[in-house]
Length: 156
Image (cartoon, rainbow, N blue to C red):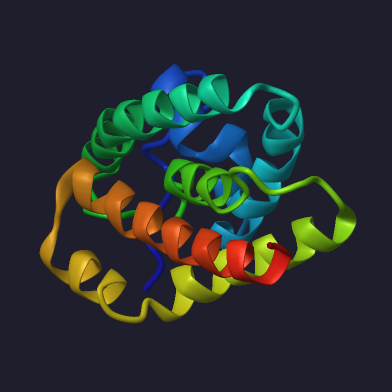
């Protein structure tokens, strides 16, 4: 049975961010819609210098531990599918230092979704054994790193 989204309020700033500006409320494949909603954010961040991009990424990751943990607690579900802030961060990791073209966007999107959905080891281990906000964030951070490594091999 699908977990209810009734306890989420987009008027709550924590829920708004956790739900990826509402993209996580998609009735099917919320993680995919969350990743898709991260593309415009990436396009806004792409022109930033590497230090600023990485700084924002670290801040978003650390804040995500609280954001995702609080939203999950409010929903009463340990890792509610509608919580997609972790997908935002994972996709932004995937695209770090990658030039912006339609090809890199498609490949980055596909690679991140591949690692996030299939969860090869160690992502599956983290997903099963790390809980709370840290657990919600960490498996997607590692999926993003794996996808980023593939992007570096493909495009460099």
